[in-house]
Length: 145
Ligand code: SF4
Ligand code: SF4
Image 1 (cartoon, rainbow, N blue to C red):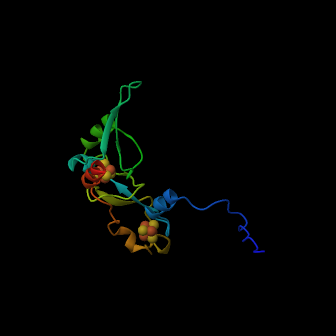
Image 2: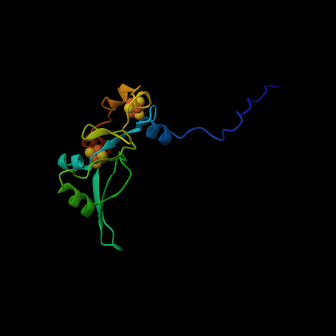
Image 3: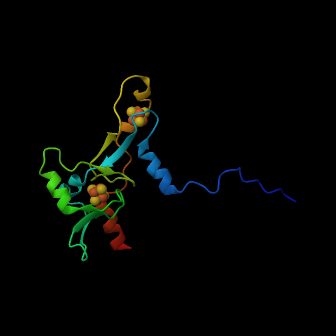
């Protein structure tokens, strides 16, 4: 009889694929703590078909989000527009999925500091992340199926 391979102590299950993806958009290899972000202003400028808007009946607020889950938060449109009127703009939200060629992305750091603890040991993290198909192509393909 073949012996069953024992489960290593302390682990209950495998890391989910979503967790792996989130991990790939963050780097914690030094004290700077960097995250890839996506800028919703770019979604509007590129007229991305994955950008959705909805009105919440209870609050009367309008929200926007990404159908492709490149970011998962839903953004209050009024707050976004107010921020966009300032010099700084709204900025970015945490990337959670594979970006598309339309997504405007950047890397943001949480902490600044000097010396070895803050010295980058993963410069490749600043390269453009791998992109998936353009949303317009994906939707066209889905319509054809
Ligand atoms: S796919 Fe990219 S550009 Fe389109 S809505 Fe999502 S984050 Fe914005
Ligand atoms: S500075 Fe470099 S090593 Fe440090 S967290 Fe950012 S990408 Fe990672």
